[in-house]
Every structure is written in structure tokens, then in C-alpha cells.
Image 1 (tube, rainbow over the protein chains, first blue to last red):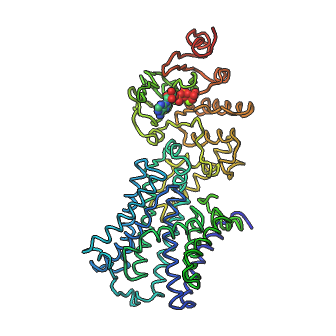
Image 2 (tube, rainbow over the protein chains, first blue to last red):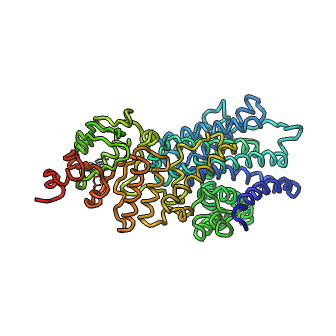
Image 3 (cartoon, each protein chain N blue to C red):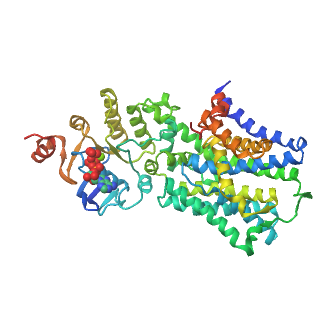
Length: 321
Length: 254
Ligand SMILES: Nc1ncnc2c1ncn2[C@@H]1O[C@H](COP(=O)(O)OP(=O)(O)OP(=O)(O)O)[C@@H](O)[C@H]1O
Ligand SMILES: [Mg+2]
């Protein structure tokens, strides 16, 4: 294979996946379509999370908060203000980005490692407290239902219709993130992870890079929140707690820290896994934990490292073993 | 030749300790100026104060007349004063080429939106930076290592890549903190050659911290001698050789 043709091949492969996925609703039933929709959402959540802990290398756990902010923003904007749901997606992204901005302020104050982890966890729990207590806006523990809606005459209650919207949003955000990571800004993000002091010595404004990464992570995750609101049709505070956090953390690790391909794979596999584990009632969590642990023992750098070894087609400039 | 950098009465105090005490000197275009002194003399602190990593408690740092004292490290680097680190500042997980490309960050065009949207001119800027980084590595005969992980290079190669990265943006002033430490004699000669070329061909003004006195004498135009945070001597190589204070305080002769 010619070296120069590799990027072109890779680009074709990238676009071939969503094109083939256009046919997926022909093959699914109601249940499998619902699971597939969840995979697209999980892929974006994992991507946003991986950006912060993998590429930027910050032990920050605020992404569940960004997800909840996006979901609530979408529900509030469409249920209360009557905005079409599709319009709430980018707006939810902006609300998530604002959350990222707030979360980054801790990192920018020099709070790092375990301290950053604790502060960002507290931020997530604080947001949950707000969802429960801001009852007039959020509906409290009862949550908030999204109104029934159509898009170009298609019902947004139909999972197959939702799938096409989710797919479009996911592909756009994944492509944009890939553009970001393959640029000088993506290099700067990794440089901050590797050696923040030396990064500044090259004229790179490290504070701005950290802020930008959190905000973009928040944007991607906030958009995913808007998809999630429509996916389940109803947002509750409990959806944005520790379980959600641990599950997306596992997806990041199983896929491979800092890898876009890994984020998608980790999300797909770990969204599917619990569905198979339903056959073992009462043992689901145990098996889930064992399987995740086993994968990480064999592949400490996740599935992305396996693919990368299999073919240069899967090597990513921003992913490091 | 004109003065590029003018450091006047620079002082740094760390709670109780005066690490830098009223240090003044100038650096000319194309000049290699060594900074020597025993461990703890304040040499690295002098670099940190000039490059913005510690805020000077007094004094001024003028780059071509513009005062840099108190600015942030990235702003000072963008103004054209770039440095290396005593303990090495490479990004180990990035490739050699990517390390050099980070040195071109500030001068590579393309806004966040242009980049995220994949606009053509942002992609072209990225490709141009890549080509330029390759050229810079070729100049130092390091291009064959371009795709290696920087952390896998030998100590000497890492020092050279760090310098290539630091001078990628053509800064007028370069601060090198013990670039030759731990190098083999061959690598050390190569390093000296690089320093001479940067000063001689590109007119870079270089401040060089170095403990090996014979190396300093062979490459420096002028030498600044420090001890206990103070400047104890400043002059050309022959002047420093004859200086009694230096002989006693530093070179260890009776
Ligand atoms: N950030 C800091 N906080 C407190 N003290 C410091 C700090 N940085 C340096 N010092 C102190 O300032 C003094 C000068 O240190 P510096 O690193 O500048 O010495 P140096 O001349 O570079 O020595 P060496 O040759 O060993 O590298 C030392 O006593 C050091 O402990
Ligand atoms: Mg030092």
C-alpha cells in the first residue's frame, strides 16, 4: 500500500461507517433500535470525557454534570419555552460548554490530580442537588417530560427517526473533534498533559488551552445530553449520578484513553454488554465489572491499542499507548 | 552590534532567601554569553525571572526596549525570548516532529472555529508547519528521527530536539540551561557547533548556563559569573581568566 494513499483510505473508511449505518433501521426491531440510539449517545459522552482525562490528562469528573446540564437545558427549552427539540441541541451544547468553562476554573487555579477529581465530583453532585431542588424549573424528583414533536412530518417518538438525527449529530461532533485533535490546538492539548511548564515556554497560552478543552468537552457532552433527553423522553436527576459517571469512565478506559476510535468502540461494546448480561439476573454488575477488568488486564491501553497494532489504518495522531 | 536584551537590577526573593540580588547585564545580537557559578548561585532563577516563571521582586528586563518583567511565560515566549529547561522539557509521548511543531504553534494561523470546521486554510497551515518542522530537523541532521517518540531518544538527541523546538520560531533571544550536561564528548561537540551556528549565522543572542569551564571558554564571547545570587564578575574570556574574585570564589584557585 502506498503511504500517501493511507490518509485517503482512512477518510473513506471514516465516512463509509455512517453511510452504511443509514441502512441500520432496516435491520432493527424496536428494542435493538433503542439500544443502537443509546450507543450513539454513549459514544459522544465517552468522547467528551476522554478528551479531558485522556488527551488533556486532567483527572476531572465533571462530564456527568455537562451531560445533565445538556439534558435539562434541552428539556427546559422545549417543554417550558416551546423551542423545537432540534434547535435545543446546539443550545444544550452551549450550556454544556458553560459547565466546562466553570469546571476548568478549578484546574486553572492550579487544582490538580486528586483535588481536581474531588472538586469536579462535588460539582456533579451539586448539579444533581439543583435538579432536585429547583422544582419549578426542573420538576424536582419527578423530572421533566419532553413534549411530543414531529420533525419534517416524522414523529420524534419513533426511535428510527431519532436514530437519523442522533447519527448526524454524532458524526458531525466526532469529525469536528478529530479536526481539533489533529491540529496545532490538539497538539497543544497533549503538550499541556506532557509538560505544562514547557508548553508555556513555546508561547502557547496553557490556561486558554485548558479552558478550550473543557469547554469543547462540555459542548460535545451537552449536545449528547439533548439527544439523551429525547432518547428517554423524560429527564430525571438520577440519570446523572455516579452510575452514569462510572459507566462512561469504563467506556473511556476500555476504548483507550485519548482515542476517538476507542471512545466509539468502548461506548458501543459497553452499551451492548449489559443487554446481554440481562440473561443473568442479579449478577449483571458483577459480570460487567469482571469483563471490564479482564479487558483492561489484557489491554491496559484499551481496544484502540489492539486496532493500532492490527493496521496503520487505525493509528491516530493524538492517541498514545 | 546592538543590545537585544537589557537586564537591570533584577532581584528575586523567595520567602527569606534572596535568590537573585541586583543583577544587571546586557546581551547583544549574535552573542554567546555564558552564565557560570556554583550550584545554587541563582543561575536558573535568573532564567526563570527573565522568562516569566518567577516574578522578579525588583528590576527590569528589556527586550529591544520593551519591558517584559512580570509578564506571563507564554507572553514572553511570544515576544521572542525562548528557553530550554535544566531537567529537559520535551513532551515524551509526542513524536520528535510533533515536538518541533509545538514550537511553531504561536505562528501557525487558524482559529478554533476554522480548525473545528476543517476549513482549507487551517489544514494548509498545519501542512506548512509540518513541512517546516521537517526542514528544521534536516538542518540538525535529525530528520530521520522525526516519527520516533521523543521519550525514546537518547539524552543527547533529546537535548538537540529541545533546542530545535525552542528555536523553531526564530526567536531573537535564546536561554539554554545546561544543554550539554550528561552528553558524550561527540554529542557535546555537536551541541557547541549548534550554538555557534545559531549565534553566528542567525544572529541569535544566547545566554548559556554551563558548569564545564573549558567548554564555556571555547564558545562564549562574554561570561557572567554569579555566586549567592549576585553578579561577581562580568567580562570577556581573557578578563574572567584573570579575575581574582572569580578565581577565588568559583574556579577554586588559591
Ligand atoms: N521556587 C523556589 N522557591 C524557593 N527557593 C527557590 C526556588 N527556586 C530556587 N530557589 C532557591 O534559590 C537558590 C538558587 O537556585 P537556582 O536553581 O537558581 O541555582 P542554580 O545556580 O541554577 O544552581 P544549579 O547549578 O544547581 O542548577 C537555591 O538556594 C534554591 O534553593
Ligand atoms: Mg540551575
